[in-house]
Image 1 (spheres, rainbow, N blue to C red):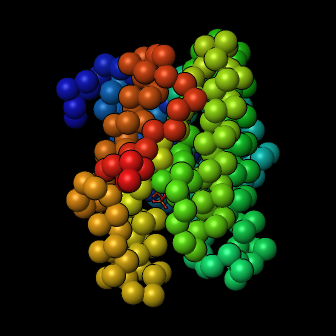
Image 2 (image 1 turned 60 degrees about the vertical axis):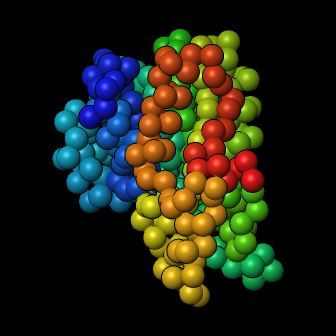
Length: 256
Ligand code: ADP
């Protein structure tokens, strides 16, 4: 629990996609700590149910964000039950297999795009519809330092996460007059299951870990909680005049 516990999101409804693991789960926990009723969405039903059982005031929904119809149906069900959505953490994502561009197959490309691009769009569209009807709302999309700088062997991921920056700016401008703010965070190497898998998949995992730990000016790697704190800030009224921004949470990596 933080100093601000029980405060900023009291009485608010928040939706977190990809909430079963890593950054999504940490963001959900932070929002619960700050008073929100949090709906946890993930295609991995076991992980999201486990996450919900840890958090008072959280409910789990099974959802594959790359299924446009399922996204619409889930948001309809949420609105029917809760009446509104005040905050969205649009986080569900995959990294995909790592290959040089010329060895990246159509299927590798599209499997990442279906989740990170199409899925992020379907979820954003559904949430914005609800927020427009309510006259307010706040969104944080999940970008990545791989969307702001080049990282080898991550072409589909980097493309999709750079796309999130553009989608965030576009939606921010479009919905500013509707009292809806749209921002993004761009974390670098944070110790999540996704990053652990990235390290394990490398030809030399130890070297990859050392390299990731030495990437940013600040030593070591960030934690999911570091990112969750920035997400909560951007979603909260403390960030009332911030929209369209992608905030690096990277120990200074983006400054290099
Ligand atoms: P991160 O480092 O972003 O936290 P994780 O792999 O730990 O990465 O978490 C990503 C979450 O997104 C996982 O819980 C995963 O099940 C979820 N996810 C991945 N693809 C989808 C999808 N198509 N629909 C919903 N959730 C998804």
